[in-house]
Length: 359
Image (spheres, rainbow, N blue to C red):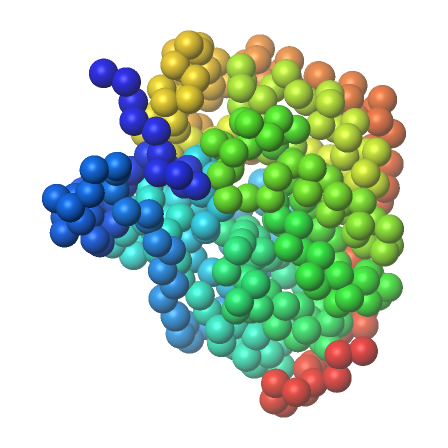
């Protein structure tokens, strides 16, 4: 029997049970059971819902040796972009929700994030370091247009002169180009834009609600034109799906103004592996087994390698081939010659209260 496609505009085909927490398998939409008897052309559209969350702290810290930051802020939980490969999907299980459709449709927003960050930066013991945004879910996913939480975080960081590194796959970052340009003047910001593929058809199924590849390249161009340093993530590289585009993506990013680029082979932690396999069967049944075979070859015979260091690089001949091709592509494009410089020298504790001086 053929694998059913994902609901229109979504990445995951359905919800799946998280065996780690014995979550019940869920229907894709709360109205499903009531509506299915009354319709003839499929289930009702899957709505996105947003729950307001009020955490007591906002700065997360990590000690992972293969990550270039040790503190981050996540304005949202879940991500409407719906990228089928997203390594953050399993985090929804901690909320008693599915890493499948729940992750991309049942979102959580933290409107107090800037207030909490301001209080943290004012503490006498705070040591100024780069704050990473977008380490778990995208800070510029669609709901940012309404909540503007990421912008409020940037306002606090600019006032405090605390540097920020942003990772996104959305051209919505341009909505904050005024703040970002001012931060760049003080060496306070670097942006990593993810470009997985140049093929719009692949992007629409792989990352259904993320910005189209052409829009991401346009964002790189616009940011670079304002003097904002941009790095390009060619991530994830998916064998037999996107790996043939490595050279073209790197060249396109360089032409748009990216200063550097990097890649990560696709990672499939926990429930992501099950979702990804289902996606492959739905969209690439002709090569699903080949794709998984190469992934396992790069991951020590498993769907996923969780070990520090190798999880970001992969091992074996396939991983080495990708590294070699990427290295040559970087050289041809003239990338990775820029020394990133984010400064904490101008740090100053922000004012007491939300109305600070921005510039």
